[in-house]
Image 1 (cartoon, helix red, strand yellow):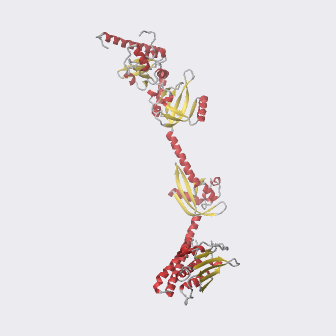
Image 2: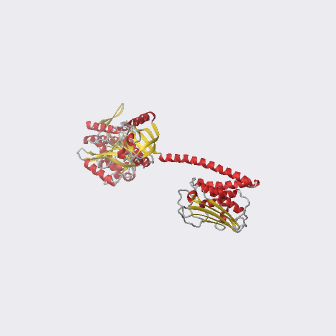
Image 3: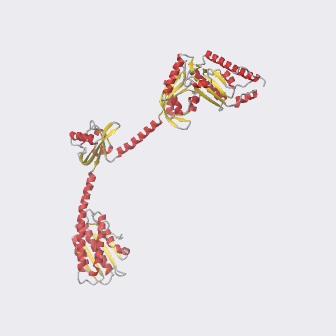
Length: 520
Length: 112
C-alpha cells in the first residue's frame, strides 16, 4: 500500500481495494458464522497452513479422503444430482480427468457407462434399490474414445439426515484381465477340440495315484469303456500294462526321464479283442501340478502295411528274376532264329512289348491285367486302325493272371509285328479280328483268337521262327492250354484256349456275356 | 483477460458474453466443499453455458495453492476474469448474492 497517495484517482483505487478486502473479510466472518467455511489459511514463515474449523469431523473426513486417495482402485462419489463430489488419484488417471476439472461435473461428462444388456441393467437397478449396493461389470467409454471393461462396486451414500444422498463407486479396469480370460477360453476350446477329435487315444493320469483322470473319445472308442468307467482306473486295469508293478515302473521312469515309449503293447479291449498299440507317455507340469499324458496309437494298420511292403519287396525280387530270365530267353532265341543284322532292332522291339505288359502289371500291383487293356497296349501302334481294320470283340472286366498276361501279351506283340511286316496290316485292305471269351460250361474255358483276312497271300513258313515259338509253345505254357496256328491262304489265324482258372485272376468273377469292344 | 466494466451497458454485455475464468478452492470432500462445488457448477451451467473455465483446487492436498491466490478460508471461489478479481467464501448456497457478485444478475431500477 502506498502511504502517500499522489492523486485523486489513486486514492479512489486504493479505497476501492480496501473496500473489497473489507467486504471479503466480512463475508468470511459471515461464512464462518453460518458454518459454511471449513478451513482458514494462515501464512507463517514456513508458508501457508490450512487450519480446519470444523473440528474432529473435518479431520476425520480428510483422513478418509487421504486413505481413498491412496487406494489403487478408482473411486468416484457423486451427489444426488449425479455431480462428482469426490474423485481419487486412481480415478483421475483412469478417466484422464483431473479432480480440478471433474469435481462438480455431471458424471456423464467424465465417462459414458453402458450395460452389457437391458436385462442386466434392470437386474442391477433392482438389486441396488433393494440393498443399496451393487457389484458387477459395465462398459465405460472414455472421452478419448477408449472402451474399458470396468468392474464396479457401487454403494449408496447417506446424507446427515440419513436420507440417500448420492453414491460411491469403486472401479477397477478389468479390460486386460477379460482379454486374457477370453484368450484362455479360446485356447481351451481349441486344444479341447484337438483332444476330443484326435485320432490317437489320449489318457491323462495323476502321477501320484497313477489313476486315469481324463480320456478322449477316441480312447473310449478304442477300448470300449465309457469315460466314467475309465476314470479312476490304473493302466494295468485296462490291459495296457501287465500289472501294478509295471504301472509303478512307468511312473518311476517318467519321473527320471519325463518320457517313456512302448513301441508295441498288446491292448485288450473290453470285448477281449487284441490291438497292437504304441504308447508314448510324458510327464508334464500343469501350472505346478504334474500330470502324465499317454498317447496311444493303434498300430495294427501300420504293422499290416509294413508286412505288405515286405511281401511286395519279395514279389518284386521274384518278378525281376523272372523278367530277366524272359529277356535272356528272348535274346538267345532272337539271335538263334533271326538275321544277325537285325538282331538289335528285333530284340529291342520284343523288350518294348514286354515292358508295355509289365507297366500294366505294375499299375495293377501284379494282381493281373484286363484283357482289353492288354490288347490296347500291344496294338498301340495300330490304334488308328482300331474299329476299321482291327476289330476287337470280347467281354469287359476280364482279368488275366500274371503269367497269362505276360504270355498272351508277348504273343499279341509277335502277332501284331508279323501282321505289320507280312500279314493283313502290311497292305491297304487287310483286317484283323481279335476276340476273347469265357465259355459257360461246367468247367469254364478261356479262349482268345487272332484272325487275319485280306492281306497278301500267305505262304506257310518252311521253318519255325522264334515268333512262332512265342505264339505257340510259350503262350501254351503261360496258360497251360493249347495254341492252334493255321496259315490260311487268306490270312494267319491263331487260337489259344485254356481252363479259365489257369488264365484268369482268381478274384475276378468270370463275365460270360460277349459284347463288342471299342478297343479303348 | 477482459477489462472491468465501467458503464452499465458494458456490465450487461459482460454478463451476457464475457468468458469467465474461475477457481474454486476447497478442502477435501467436506460437506461444505461438496456443496460449494455443486452450487458453482450449477450456476455455471445455468448462466455461463459454454463460456466458462472452472478449476476446483483442493488446498488440503496442496496448501501452496492457497498462498498463490491469497486464499484465507475455504471454500473460496475466485473470479479471475472478467476483472476485477472477486472472491466469495462459503458453500456458495447464497445464490443471489453470488450471482450479483459475479455480475450475472441483470442490473435493473438504476439509471444508466
